[in-house]
Length: 214
Length: 214
DNA sequence: ACCTGAACACCGTTCAAGT
DNA sequence: ACCTGAACACCGTTCAAGT
Image 1 (cartoon, protein in one colour):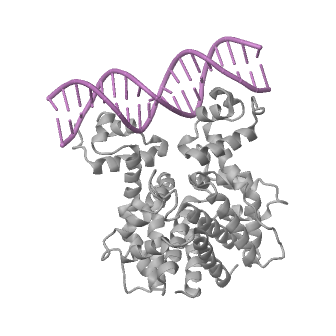
Image 2: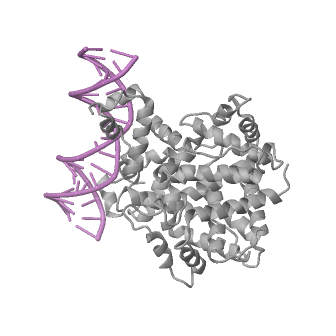
Image 3: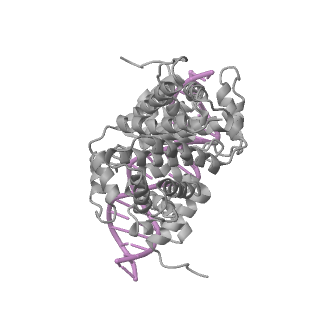
């Protein structure tokens, strides 16, 4: 037993992610992290610039979990499905981290490989330049939007609320004014998150296949 | 001059949003808000439950700015364009608030009207139940994803970074490894955010029109 | 080079006390 | 009913000091 290992950036990264997974973003403090790795708070500053870099490390750790089968011969639609779903799964495995991703993703080295792979697949739909940019931003917007926006998920519920509470709140709305909101809340109560995401992705892929590329 | 008015929830809401617009999320503290409206920090607790409700009020204020032309006779595609773009504009007008939206939107009363209107339009594409849910979540994911994810926007840049810094960072990557990332970064440097969003929305609408509804 | 304790300038919020 | 000062238990980070 004893001291678990030398203090490294990698160990801080793993400990910080574990802290966020267990206690949410508010649980990630310099003091809590120091205690978790068995040092004094100020020691952390020898390995990390400050709290902001800690968040960047956590985002990078999550995005680094993106795993996909790289098959350059696959049809472009299949490749887009594969990579987009892999990104969605990585984000969803760490729901508390998701709010940090949009602001930090442009500086995440771990996101570069899957991004380039996704772009390569989208380019094979016949797009380049501005059209490729739009296609890429659309897919990533959908991935993050779905990851962030589960109707019954841990992010949408208030702290300490039951899992289905959000859906119940919608169902309790006045039916004559919000009939459609009530309808989808009912549908959401029996639907699987990954099915929802995949169906949404199919809509976008159908649009990518249909819209004249350039 | 003198004391500006009685302290109300509405005044707190407006002052909180102004604070966030001017100084970012970190600037929204009970103490700063109290000073802005000319009272003691503890006075705020007579009108607001705590800091969390303050954030909810800010999100609601932003979403309440969603303005769209309500035309029940319009073709469903036109209605979807109109409402989705209105949501995107409201969010983008207050970039610092955007990160708060996903977690709080299910409790925002101000979002219910545009949501129901969007659902009504999507229902006219022939969808109901689970298919309607997927269509709705896809459009809102795209809206929030684009609002959050401007490549050169204030959210993606580090604090105090130049506007084009994110794009320059991408362009500085090794060209043999990330040719596509560099390509879209170049495209992003001359593109307009609203054009990008609208083009992405067209992709999704094309998919909605093409995919067999149910 | 790496570690650390004390201290500073902040937070949100509880509590008791005012009008 | 509405307001408020003092105090408590936290933050991130600077600084000076240790090995």
